[in-house]
Image 1 (cartoon, rainbow, N blue to C red):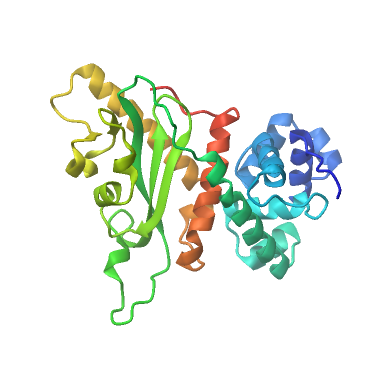
Image 2: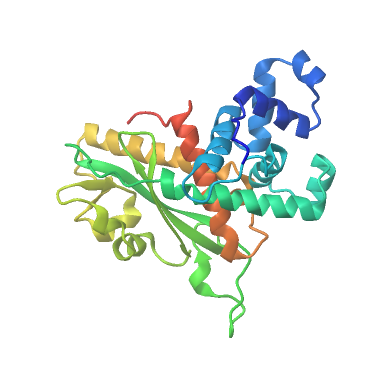
Length: 295
């Protein structure tokens, strides 16, 4: 079996821009920052992160890719799909990729990236002496209206945030480290965030005496959740404001991927593949040069 040879960030940058139609001579004439910005705009993150994921896909214990059997350009097609979310015809023209080929590799690599969450998104065993551990939030994404056996619409999927059918995911982010420590879902968007928090595992993960920070939508779990209120002094108010703003910054990073930002055209049963893959990419971005700001 051939040994896996990692692709350097510079090599990944060159391959990605070449896929976009920018040949080596053109790349050499451009400013390095222009190449880097254009790469990230089309593939969702820096060449450093994209190269890191490619290595992880070949070295992970959870079903690694066989060396020599897969190609970087097919992998980049999947990242382009998550970031730009083109139709098959749009991708055929912009990347010169056949419709069936593009569809095959977009789903294949998205699913492989999504599976990395099992190794990367980990709940810490020891939280140390801090009282406030994480921020938690439910984020909604729009989907096609799921079929209902009786009614035109299934109200359980209705999202008050988007005003149409959606899916909800619960995200927990460490307050004192720049990393995602919990994701859960998808859930039907009509279900309240606090019910998910109380009934689907996260509340039970919080050690005795520890707290999480969330918005007022979590008021039904006040024994564990701390949200902004008029009794807070100025320092506590500012701490909670910054913690929630920091979490919102991560949500914005997720929404920079159009597969999540736009109405999901595919079956809602596959939405979690796109979501998990994007979370993995954004999580690794936090670890590789683009952390969240300190609280």
